[in-house]
Amino acid sequence: MALNLINRVPIFVLAFMLTTALNMVGAEATAVQSRVENGSTIVDQSGRRLVSKKSFKRIISLYGAHTENLFNLGLNKEIIGVSRQETYPPEASHKPAFSYHDDPERFIAARPDLVIIRPMIARGYPQFVAALEKSGITIVSLQPDTVENMHTYWHILGILSGTRHRATTMISQFNTAVSDYKALTKSKSTKKRVYFEAIHSKMKTFAPHSMAAFALETAGGINIASDAKPFRNTNIAYYGKERILSHASEIDVYLAQSGAMNQPSVELIKNEPGFNAIKAVAANQIFIIDEQIVSRPTLRLLEGIYEIGRLLYPNLYNLNAYAILERAMGF
Image (cartoon, rainbow, N blue to C red):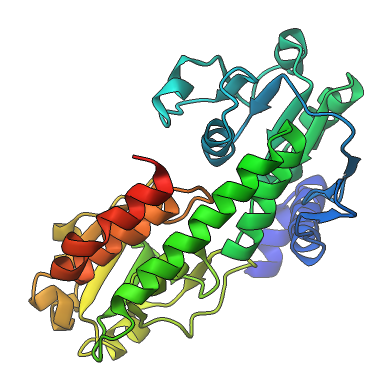
């Protein structure tokens, strides 16, 4: 039956499927982490090398995290466009909206000197990227996958925009807050054990190196799925219902992120067949948290740590932790 089906598929379709698969494998195998060389040479995640000689003054951001970080660097004036449906910070909603689905001529007409994308756009829309580069627009592709890489990413944004000092300050504020958060629960002899859901329908959790896992552990939680293996070099990891239920008696708290790829509810999790055996589910310790504060490489990751901490250790965090967040975020 399989051979008959394949024989009926046009050869050009099979060729397209094979090419697509090879491209995906190649993209993963040759993935480049962004870095800075010799203080001013930037290497982005597509392998582009850019020697920074001047700061960019007309920037279009095609990822919400880029936009948020650029605003944190004080670049309201320099940001001339953002991706669609951006709402944070509120000022972003007043900027012209752009998309990689748009005709490149729309970008060219806006006269940006820099467009910051992410690897998904670079891989999926190479003709769009090539058209902008052909017109003389600088393209930089960035999306860090760990907190360590996030610091490099902030540093790169500072170099590109002429705000190195502010970027260095952001990194320092972040690291100080992380140390202060960790100190809150350092002396606790018993810590909460947590399963952190990434995608409910596929029973996926977060990879151990992910920002969400970092936020959980910084808040004082123990990641019950610390043995999860990343899926295709991403921040997501398949875990499966059987493995989740094998830890049923150990899970004190069930966390789930809510966002575009996962829109769970407490009731959905409660009603999942077999989940009534999970300790956290039986004790109504199910909580939903916004993906923007646990999965994006921005200063608001500190807010995610704070919110997780309040869920795990309400008395401790409600008493002492807001001051840490206040100092770091400048509330």
